[in-house]
Length: 89
Length: 160
Image (cartoon, rainbow over all chains, first blue to last red):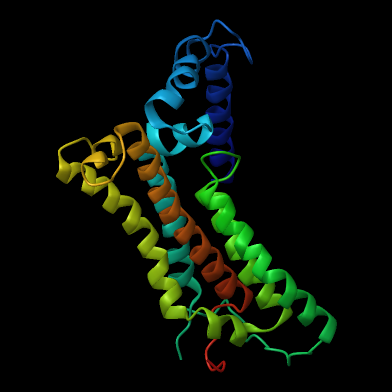
């Protein structure tokens, strides 16, 4: 059973490494995020959100739904910690 | 269910004038700095996650320098657990508010109808609102996790 699990892990890892072959190079200026998405955010941030810090505006405004999920993850971690550990006498 | 958890010996508290005085002096500036990091996230590195972590760290410092009772006296467990959920509620509530006013979920631009600001500024204010929610949640979750892991879940009977 352990050997089977090892094979599954090995296979999944090989699949993930195979998936990275297609990714653009690190910092490639011609890749899709660097040629469309980042310039759009950097140019329009101040005009659209009145926030000088582009990181904050992307995190909380453009990708606000993602941050809601992150906050829920933290909340869930806290609740699970209470449920598993807290002992009431 | 609890067979894996051994009985935890809660040691006596050893008062130390130096540590207590230093913490008494340091904790208010740390909390003020946490609030600054949350509020100044629009203009400098920072935001809800980082500021909430700093606020939680100040309580953890109090936990280390004093004892559990001191932390629970200043931040009651019930209040702390309620605050955990309040932060997420503020975040989701602002999203629902945008929905009610007629825009997409978490589309803060529509908040200019109820806030005295032009739409772009309303977006900044909506962002600030959710940062506050994130900060509250992160702070109380940090305190809660530290309390529960540090005492293996047995921190009752402490003076409140």
